Image 1 (cartoon, protein in one colour):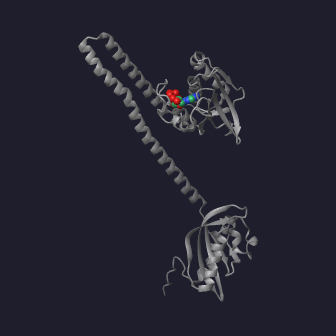
Image 2 (cartoon, rainbow, N blue to C red; image 1 turned 135 degrees about the vertical axis):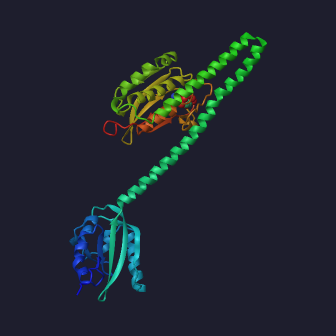
Image 3 (cartoon, rainbow, N blue to C red; image 1 turned 90 degrees about the horizontal axis):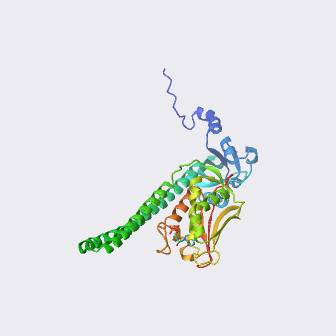
Length: 379
Ligand code: ADP
């Protein structure tokens, strides 16, 4: 007589189910914990020991609440109380995400499915626990990336708008003076022709400068130069030498602290940062009787903050964010394109740092502060 085929997965009640059960409980990756109606732990498998960090002997006989942080205690009690009241047999909480409490105090997200069985007169609950910390982290990381992408997109939109808007202004100047030039050529007015051409030259020069600086800005995200340890004092002296022309012209006294930290980064880019900040400090000295610029550093909440401080025209509180935006200039007649600080901010942020400006207001000088990762992560 032919033997009946062995079912691939033994059905409940099948002799082999009982034989395989301990093997399954001991090898399954999910934690399996059985409790009685009062919440006392009757058994837990090795995966549960691993997940919660307790050997079974430290848990068996104690209340299952020890494996749950607040407020899940009450939630669990709520379920048991409800069960005792109604006596309704049901499987609750499949896939429900709750938190577990490890022996070391760590709290982790977990999936919990609870089933109940009648064992003689006793009703038992078996919880199947899956540690989903990694899934949680991945979801959080995904949220963070989506947020960053949205911010970048919005910035890109603003950027495109500003670029197309501001590049138009020299073009409008050129078109206007070309019209005048045509008329002056027709009238044979050489003096005005020269003046028209002068304006056109100036607008072309401005446009060229804007395009060059935009190109520099677009390159900042790319790592061109391998990161290296840079003593900032040395870099600041180099930057000061490069803007010596304006410094001398404005009679500015530059002071560079000897103990500036050593930072890790792209040397030419960080030189650009100091160059722009020193150039601005010298440019916006205003009418200070003794123009002064100080490059120094301080420790704020354990973090090194490098600063370039001047005693110049200062910045109104309303503009302290705006000046870092593209093409923003507080005085449209001042020399420059309004790209410098955008570039500086971009370089500092690409290095993982932050930049901001402090000022007691117009006439009280400005302090441009920034952070950069140091030799061991913090300077
Ligand atoms: P630019 O110098 O080419 O105009 P920036 O982006 O470097 O452009 O600076 C933007 C604006 O921020 C400047 O036009 C000026 O109004 C203001 N600013 C920058 N640095 C200083 C400073 N040290 N003191 C006062 N105002 C400043």
